[in-house]
Length: 112
Image (tube, rainbow, N blue to C red; front, side, top):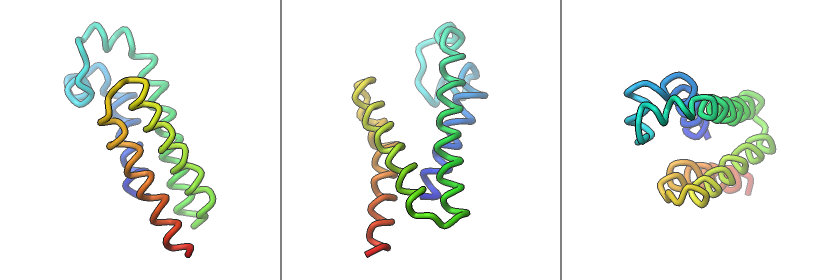
């Protein structure tokens, strides 16, 4: 769960602050500098949402609340599935959904 929170914090930083920079262009394998400029507002919005996912997971850790953790891990899972489907990039499923699914399974196993 900590890994998923840190992963989405990383996404926030890169999408909000490095989208148009060489590091961001390389990390996200973006088409061109012009593309990054044209999509900068969308990327910052996307980064903010990733930040909310990270904040929710961090809050669930601080509060030691499994229900909140399961909710945010489920949100991340759905986002990863939809992202992979809508972009036709299976890598998104592996980067986002799989760690969240493993987090969900870990929480469920610890409950049982």
